[in-house]
Image 1 (cartoon, rainbow, N blue to C red):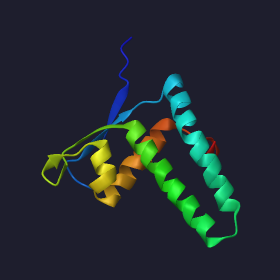
Image 2 (image 1 turned 90 degrees about the vertical axis):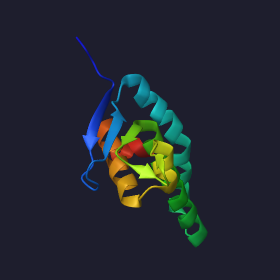
Image 3 (image 1 turned 180 degrees about the vertical axis):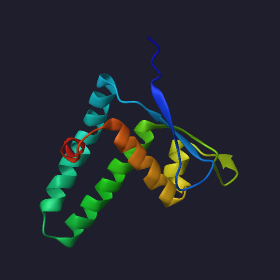
Length: 121
């Protein structure tokens, strides 16, 4: 048996751009859940708060979780240059077009197969 631990997905947003995604494995799932757990707990606590600052802090934590998911699961970006440099997952998150970031994030989440409840825990 031959198993590839990554898969490639073509962008629907930008022609010629592809994302190389890490496939989920037992160990990678555990790693991801450990990394997300504390942020998700804090976010859930803040979402329950009534103060506007709590809601803003919860939204900020959600963006941190999104970035963590992307940099955890996106191994490479091909066909995209950002400011004259080949795109990397980190550069896509930092300076790339938001629609491509969102598309790559959705692809990573789909690859994990985690439910919304599992992503929050």
